[in-house]
Image 1 (cartoon, rainbow, N blue to C red):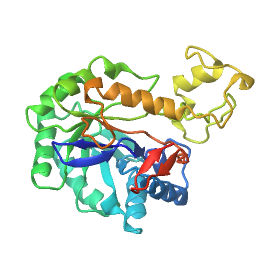
Image 2: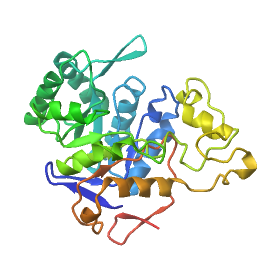
Image 3: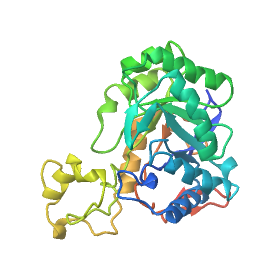
Length: 311
């Protein structure tokens, strides 16, 4: 697996990360815990070392599964945990809360759920309009100085919000949605991060599974699965707006692999040509691929050195 190094934090990360929103179950129609744990361990075995999660994914459940998968198999030292703060919930309903009080209180929660004494990449999940960005940045900087987090990140921030945040704290990672359908960051976020030497941590490379090669016009989403109302899925399955085939006979077979195309595009968009080198070279971008279902890792093989490589 190709690695990327961020000299600002000394983190060595895989160019592909494992996302765990679906593992939390909430808004994805449920999840199987045993399969989730097996997926996390399989990803590490194949060279993926970044596990991206958040407290709101299943209201703590995803973090608990990540912690269990790593701790019980003695794998914590092989993984970089990227989690988030700034979203609270009450009676099963999430709301933004990036206040100093909330962030400091959440420390004990992730210590318990993730079974760790530090977070490798800690990100503000969403900007909180009720809390000054400067307050949020200050407390994140405090945690960084205390060694409780190794890198500071923000997610779903605009360039203007990023600039305000950086007046009070260093910023190492910016996480934004990025895939074949969602490419807005190419016009502002990516150029800004390149100019300011901030790593990009894209999420949703497979667009909630739409680019996984497994979706068919008759695919059904059950229970609370958020894809019921996602316009990209509605347009795709009806043959409107996306240019996707409109009948099952026109769709690629279930074994087709759209995901390598999606990941390659994401990588190319996130790394300027002059920075692209061999897999062992230092790179400025951190990339994430969110696997909404158990990932197909058969496209990876072990190299003689023990690293995973693409076939």
